[in-house]
Amino acid sequence: MPSYKLTAPRVVVIQVGDVYGRSVGGGEVALAGKLGISVADVVEYNPYAYDPNLIAARVAAAHPDFVWDVSYLDDGVAIWQAMLRDHVALKGAVGTSSAFCMPDFAKRLGTGAVGVYAADKPDGDISSAALSPAGRALLDRARSLYARNNGGLSMSIPALAGFVGGWTLFHDVLGAMTGAVSSDSIRAAALNVDVPVGDSVNGGGVRFGAAGSLDEGQNTRAAAVVGQWQAVGVMKVVYPAAYATGSPQLTSSTP
Image 1: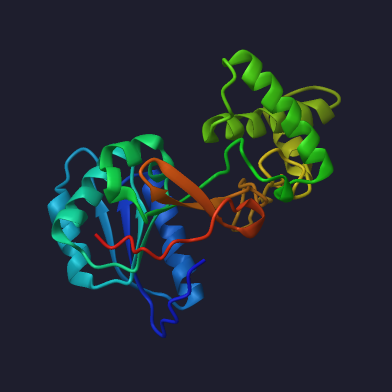
Image 2: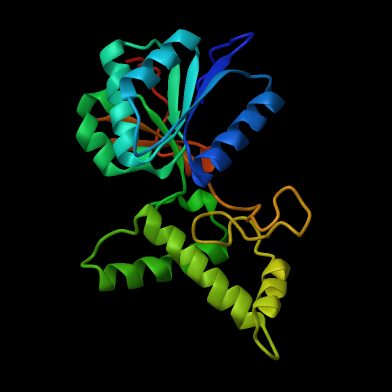
């Protein structure tokens, strides 16, 4: 990823004011603190009643180097359009919700999306370098069946994520159970699942955080990538290296 050699980087976190936005945004604020990144502002908004121009003005007033945005599609596009109109100066912007990697994001913004980064899960075109032999074999089967039932289409991000969830539940959890099935026994079986990184079709693995841990109930081996819109409608995965289909372009995402 790009290195700007900043001695005191500043970020503004934009987050939708619901459980999802606060969860992701709160995690980003905590991570920024660990990385020594100053959080200049946290801008929370109601997705049903917000003014994108006021949000853009608040971001500009904080003079951040970067923006991390947890928005849905409609509001994310509206906020970015406002930042473009106001020429808010940034070294980079990362959409940390699925909205920013959706084709509609690029379609609605056109050249305005170019340079924007999006953090999300991998899609079905994942590099084989991110997979173990077992993961590659399972992905080949999944791709073949998906294409056969979907007119030859490749697996999208939701399709791949859905497969990982379904395979984990039916193969790794329920498939390993013996005896009576109940919510408690399913939970206990899930906590015992131990899929190494690379064995899941998205390059990740499966290991759920135990009760009482900071990651309780979360898959601590979940796969994630960062992509960048590098032309109208063209996204390249730029991080991590095992997933990369391109290199970051420093043609700024500055509006």
